[in-house]
Image (tube, rainbow, N blue to C red; front, side, top):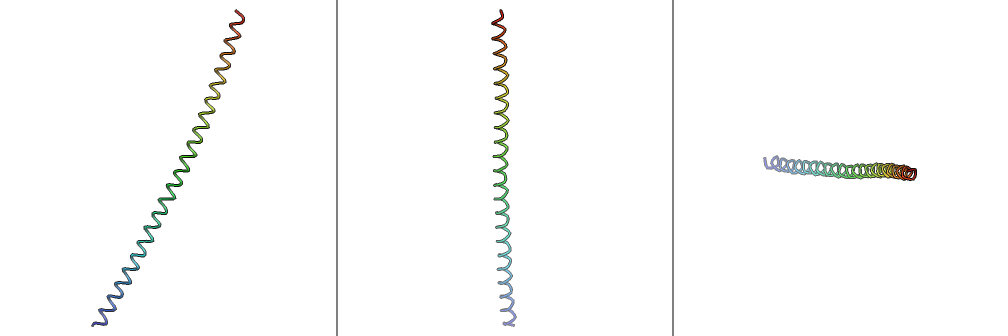
Length: 81
C-alpha cells in the first residue's frame, strides 16, 4: 500500500509539473501574441499618420496654388482698371 501511495504521489507531482509547464507555455504564447499585436498596431498607426500627413500636405499645396492663382487674377484685373 505504501508503494502504491508513493507511486500515486510521484504521478501527482509529475502531473502537476506538466500542467504548470503547459500553463507557463500558454501564458508565454499569449504574451507574445499580445506583443505582436501591439507592434503591429504601432506600425498601422504610424502608417496612417504618415498617410494623413501626406494628404494634408497635398491639400495645403493645392490650396496654396489656388490662392496664388486667385491673387494673380485679382492683380491682373486691377491692372486693367
